[in-house]
Amino acid sequence: MLNTIALDAKTYWGASGSQAATELTIAREVSITSSAAEADLSSRASSYKLSKPSLKDLSIEITMLNDADDAGYVAFRNAYNGGTPIAVYARDRASGEGPDADFCVFGMSRPEPLEGEIVVSFTLKPTRTARAPAWN
Image (cartoon, rainbow, N blue to C red; front, side, top):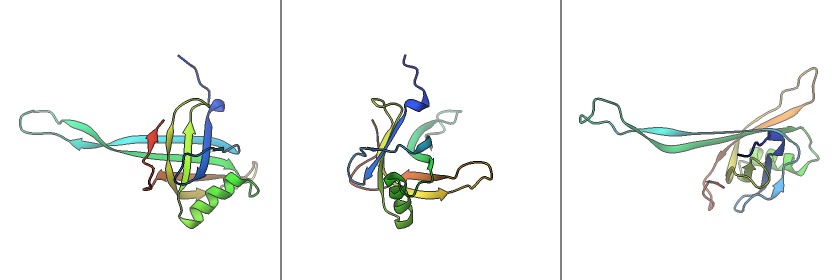
């Protein structure tokens, strides 16, 4: 089994409609959260509640350096401000796996700590485009 450390993870971005290919080198932290809704399959034939996974929910939070000269930062900021999709592929290592989809940016936050550098966090969720979300 391969022991992967987060430093080896790669996050790519690009134009909506195609797989992201440009590495987001100013990313500091990337958090991927996925869960499934619960479909109730219960009936009177069983005294137990029966369930099955249903629609999956996926979100990615990317914290990056606040660098208005970086093309990746500008792309995410513009996607947020314009409400336009952006392609993102977040892998656990260069040849690894992770979510690949076109995302809309639903949140942008910029804490400004007294003793620290300014970073920006973007919250992403998959959106409807010609590319269906996948885990590659």
